Image 1 (cartoon, rainbow, N blue to C red):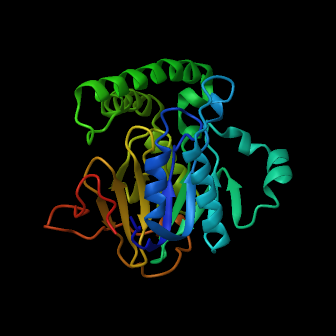
Image 2: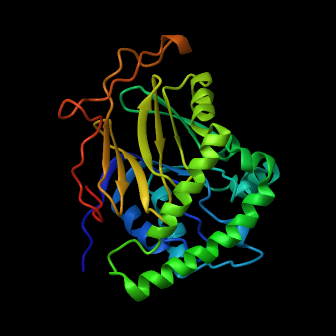
Length: 299
């Protein structure tokens, strides 16, 4: 069967693909990638799960296909930005970057980037683990819990295969469980507050992150917060279209759309001069509209 032509988009952002983990949805992720032709790609952390190298490493042919597709995109002109996360923190080592990544064309690694949209809005792009109190103060606890969570994922997958329809999310139960745990962590560590404050100090109008595996688009406190989600439980990604519209593509739920207004100037002179973001109002109440059905990668 011949694939339809990929949709040109300005920017594609994904996080928490966790290649190397047996629960990574590499095949679904590859299908998502093939649906778009981006000018820039941001891999917003935990793209490779190095925590599994010593125990539970699971690298499949689909993982190779993902890497080869990204290389092919780079050869055709796509700029690839890799944001290091807690599961691929080895990329934060300057020696590794200078020794292994220098020869790779159109490929850049950093702890964070600043992306400017087609309408001039600035978004800080960072994985988010550096604003998580567990990761910064007790990573041993996070690594220990990941072993238990892997067992939960395996059980959830078995339950799905035995009792549920195949079009349902095989990790839906774990997605709910992880959301509850991350809600507690976010409350204790003030995750959104700290990451939004950091974005404001970086002269940005919003932040795009991953880490907590909870895809969302939220506007408030004169800032935008976008979480790209993951490719284990949720299968989600964020795209910026050429008309400036931001679209959160969700495999098992309706897509979310954020229509950014045109900015009066390209950049504010100071942080205080950033005017309150006012997303387009749809139906007099909503900040985004839903147009894509679950399971469809809207083009």
